[in-house]
Amino acid sequence: MFENSPIAGFSEELEQEAINRFRQLTAVVPLNCEIFRRIDDRIITLYLDFRACPQELSVILKNYTLLARVSHQLGLANSLVFTLGKRIIGWTNLTKND
Image (cartoon, rainbow, N blue to C red; front, side):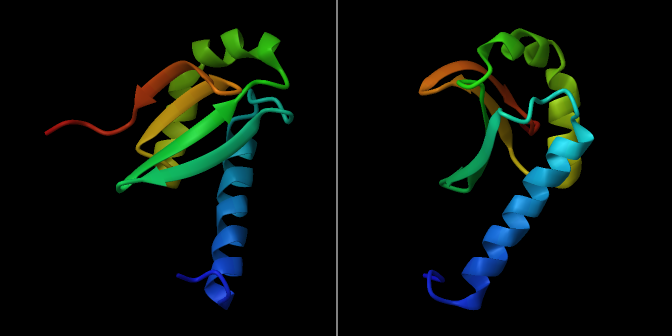
């Protein structure tokens, strides 16, 4: 829809800035951990892929409340997914069911 418009570039820059802010506020996430978002049917998921640093995953899972809090404060996602490549290791929902 916006692939060739200035909005697409702005959107990508804004996305990258939000992820950079997330990294700054959650210093426990290693720099080689890949972070990206996906939107599926109005559900925004923040993925943290530990394929490049699997030894760090257990520490991060113990601190998932910090990640959830910062993600919520920045409005980044409805849920967090922790992966090792294509394998899902952990998941948490950030929204309340009313």
